[in-house]
Length: 274
Image: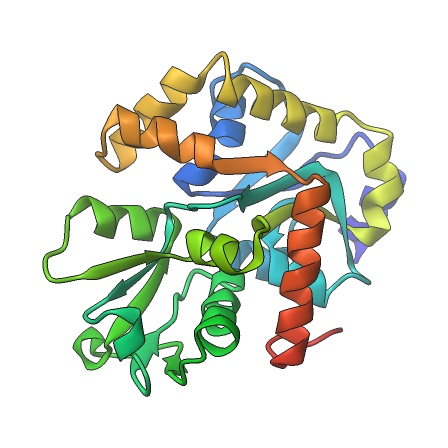
């Protein structure tokens, strides 16, 4: 509690900035790591599910979190900088790997991602609302072979895709969402803890994140792609397409997409408002 009070009073104290340690966040992360922009914050890295927990436990102050976490905690979290992770079509790293075509997955067991919050809800919306397929979704298993399909996100999805798995049907959830709604799918967004909103607004952290993104998608894009290839070896052309498919600007279309996702999530009782 003492540290939290000091954070309110002393704007010179370093903030804790969460970073998603996935390739899709490299356009923001790389320019910071490379020193192209200077940010006065302690960096804490993790997958989305980890950062979700940390910010809700007041252990980090600003972070990209899963859209579901934001929607369930609007009283605690405030979106900042119009920054998000979304796709207006293919997401390329939110993938369902299946032994069978979609229309043969009725009553099938589907393994959800341990790294995700939003995508786990999204796949259920797609199956129940759009495809009208009654599948069974499970969050953990000791034996992957028990499942007809499994959801992977981020680098986990890219790594599996890079292996070119045989006899596997691969479905992009971003493409499926776009097909049935005509809107972008917002997977995550940058937020700040609500009690720090006014303090953050007096500092340059958000503008620095925006500057990092601008550099990562333009001046440093080739280096971002090289960094991505050093993590998971896919072609330069793939990564050029990958970063074009992603959108990081939380614009009006993204807001509409998020609102529709929230509506479906509430209808299917997939989110719990706090």
